[in-house]
Amino acid sequence: MFRQHIQWQSAWVDSTLLVVLGLALMGWLSPQVWTFQGTLPITPQSLIVVLWGVLWGWQVGTAAVALYLVSGGLGAPVFADGASGWIHFTGSTAGFLFAFPIGALVAGWFAEQVTRMHYGASALLLLLGQLVIVLLGLTYQRGIIPVEVSLVENLLDLMPPLLVKAALGTLIVVFVGRGVTGHKPASKGS
Image 1: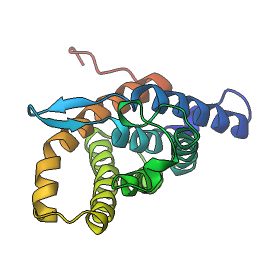
Image 2: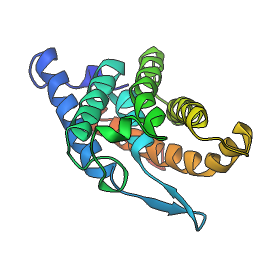
Image 3: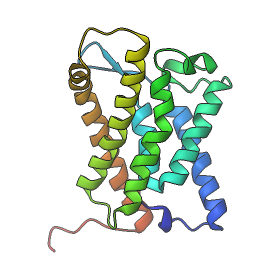
Image 4: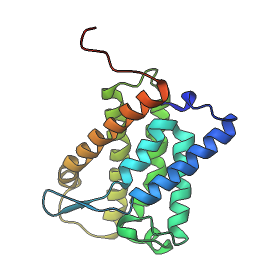
């Protein structure tokens, strides 16, 4: 968590700017849909909402996610594949949307407990936050739509994309961390 390294103005202004920046990035990147393993569509949504909490803490992350969800509900095309509207909060994918702020909160809170962000810690936090989203989303979805495959089978199918997103997010955490803390990688002669 790198919130303490950002000191542009007052703490309130800095947090507000990070929330707005998070909202902009979520709105820009979340509508994309990637295809993984040939047919499995995945979106960067769960990564981005959890990543913001890991980078800046649970308060900034959760606030950015809440604004992201409200903007999508009000009609901004920020959900997967450019979708928008309140209708998405009532269908089979609503559980994933409702789980976004919970995932950001959980990952962000745990990130604040870590005294020094390492590769492994950031990867585990990103994976944890995404697993919270997937578990809550699948549980909600199964309550609406009968599914023949077990929850474990669903999770195993989703694990490769979650691991890829966690790895990508870890790289982002490392680059942002180095940028805001001024940390330089060790030279080869050291």
